Length: 223
Image (cartoon, rainbow, N blue to C red):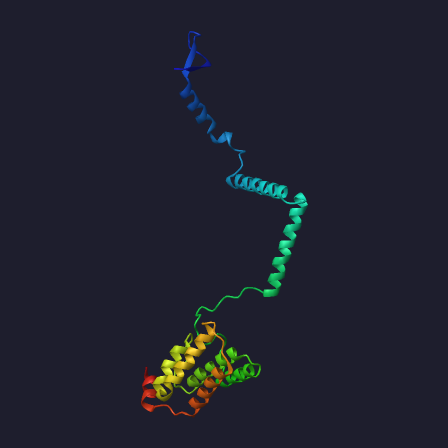
């Protein structure tokens, strides 16, 4: 075995040979003592140093591949930031979508007459999608105001039509058709026309004139 000669002497002044592996282990134990590492950088400092070196290397590589070097790279960064700022200003802050994507009402509570007025304004401007949606909301709100169905947040058009059909069975088919039209326009990507809007407008007027079936209305109120 290869040995390392250390400046140690025995009692008779004869050099002592210490095996290499135990000597290395002894040195490692000695160097691992805290007194030798008091000034070592912390884990955070080492991580930050590596990150800065990576950033520096990234910019060096990017500037080398960009016409104009570092100045060209900075010009590109400025242009990109300007484009992002322009898009943010143009589109505004992203809005969160409603938690209930198929809810009939997507804003604060309004009366049936307010929904009808909004529908009329949209119809005058030829915005048939919005006109149809507002008229369907007017129908459901009117049914709630007449206590034919209970007010319930998150109700869908299909649910409202099914509940209203119990009190107004003579209009059950029209109610289901109106709910399908609302869903097609709101979630199906289809486009309404004046005829589709007028059908729901006529249904709204007809429902206002229809007296509910007393036994089914009473049963619905007790549920």
